[in-house]
Amino acid sequence: MDVLMPQLGETVAEGKISKWFKEAGDPVQAGDNLFEIETDKTSMEVPATFAGTLSTINFHVGEVAKVGAVVAVITGAGEAPPAPAKSAVSVPPAPSRPDQPAAQASNGKSLDPWNAVPTPERNFGPARRSDGTASTPLARRLAAERGIEIAEIAGTGPHGRVVARDVAAAPDRKTSSSAPQAPSAAVAGYDPQTYVEVPLDAMRTMIARRLVEAKQTIPHFYLTTDVEIGRLLVLRKEVNDAAAAGPDGPAYRVSLNDFIIKGWAGALMRVPAANAVWAGDRILRFRQADIGVAVSIEGGLITPVIRSAEGKTVTGISREMKDLAERARSKKLKPAEYSGGSSSISNLGMFGLREFAAIVNPPQSTILAVGAGRRAPRETASSRIEFYDVMTVTLSCDHRVVDGALGAELLAVFKSIIEHPVSAIA
Image (cartoon, rainbow, N blue to C red; front, side):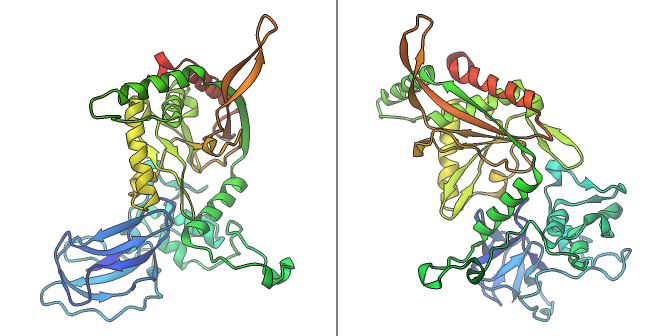
């Protein structure tokens, strides 16, 4: 039976084999780890789902396989091993006729790797073309990367849905505009003696592609406000002092960002129209606040998600965030831990930045950029000057989902929560 390259998140189209735990000819039991995948976001061990003998390895350490490619073959007792497949073949061919059924295994399950690989439709559903035919998220992404109009592709999936194999079989129409194209050094006029070339890895390539896509397809607008944080700083000190007073020392230590996550989740729940994402032909409004938090890792960044943050304590958020950040930096996050999310937070306050504007992470419609806390002067009602603690936040919005007034309302609610933290988020 074929061992396929699994789908590791809605934006991951390929993975690199970083390690094999078995060799060709080794016996395999269900649950045994076969190989390790390294993607732009994570590393993951892939176990066998059935027993037999590992007869063929098609992709070796260091080679990259597309999602759905046959990485290896496991044969059962008495089965002859298949002819070796070329490692360069990473996209399965389309069937010769749209009505031709996929090959069937003895248990009746389809061996078609593109239909067998799960897609994020459980979160966002299939998008529909103008003629009413649906397409999977993987098919839409592959079509966009190749510059093919999805509406021009005949679907061979269930109910005529366009699936990835249909895109693989379609002829190229134009060069994809979403893939960043850098000029050569000769064109740019740089002396080769003055620089060192840094090859793009999978993470930087993916970041470049998604940022270009976000800026070209999302109509951004930005809202900025100052938020007083004096009461929040006092509350955080009291929480941490209480933890430090225990007989075994500090049980935890919460950060300002932990309170911000809790406050942002509360604001989204109070303004449900903004707790939404763009889904192509519709808007999805969520019943909970799943908050993505940008974490800097070697070579880029990743956004693990705190699920249902509105119902968690600040100390619970703090423990979960520390665990997610640690595993993100070692590339051990599972796809479910960085996929989805109704909004995100990017905090660069630790670098002393006063304010900045972040790029919306599609399909989300909002991201909150948080600057450093600082002391600032202001005039009192009695014409005196006093100093207070303040931070500047900037909300980036997708205008297709969040209008100006709605974004302003969301930011005002967040400001109120942070400035009155005891009753709202403690």
